[in-house]
Image (cartoon, rainbow, N blue to C red; front, side):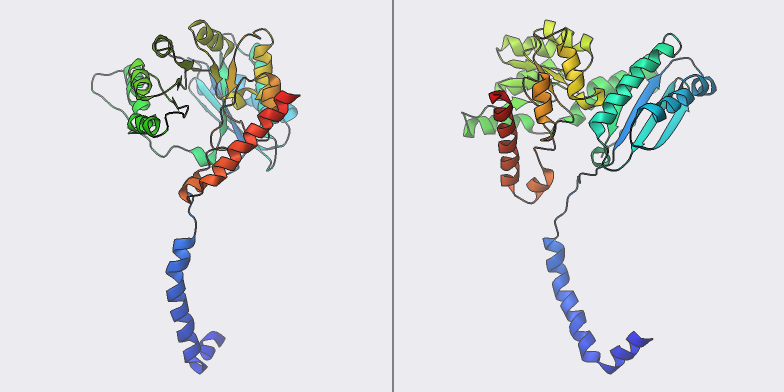
Length: 336
């Protein structure tokens, strides 16, 4: 081969190249940024239907097949559709074309799902609509088993006792206390609070507001007893009204994008204009203005504000600039 001939004719050239590669490789490896949680833009919407007691064949014929046909005529920019039907459950995944608007597709899927449910057998539950993000897949899965425990008991154990401990950050209370001590003028809050005990601990550490992913009346009651702001999570109109009546100062609508984004928020506020809603999930610089115009009192921003890559690379100024950009949007819209 020609490369062997060149190596034999010019051995010193290849030796120098090999040494160069050996010297430069560690430097390049150390300087290469690593993002353990990259932002992967894969526009996929999953719709989960549930009808207890119906076998897979009947559910496929009466729900899944017809729903797929309806989607192809009502949802724009579909790349392909996948579905899985098991006993009592059907999951339909809608893969969109690259660059398609996820908010538009969410609104279309939500609208057609609400229409389709009227034509389905009585007793079927409204579907759960979820945006799939490859960058936020679970990094930990835990299986539970127990002699003498039923499936319902195991589910309760996992959801109510183990999950809250896994989703919180160890040492968060200590960190909150330290931040409050070093920066007493800073407005700090706690998130993913699902028990009154956690609320008590974080408030004692310096939290001025308590945020929950779901509705927990005992957390609201304790937070209000300490005269702090309570922001529980809710999604459906019933949950939102229940949270408001329980004493919530604001209600976090999560995941808002799964229900149609700003249009869903506007629909909720039409009959309930007195509600103070904070959309969370799907809020970006591109959608912030739309949410404010729809009636949002505040915005819940996640990865679009707290850039994990910037944290890993030690560049807090990127997060600072993103925060300023959001404040500029708020000031501009509210000045109109």
